[in-house]
Image (tube, one colour):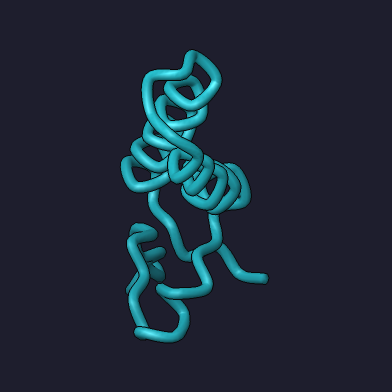
Length: 67
C-alpha cells in the first residue's frame, strides 16, 4: 500500500471523519454519520483506494537532484 494522500488531504479527512463520528455519538445526526469512519481511516493510513482506481495522487512529488 503506497501513500497517495498529501498532508492537507490527510488532515482534512481526519477532521471530517472525527466530526461526523462525534455528531453521531452526540445524537445530532443519524446513523449515516458513521460513514465518517471511511475518511478517518483513509486519512490515518494515507491511502485512498478510490484515488488509486482514478489514478489520482495528492502527495507532493519527490524531485531528483539534477546536476
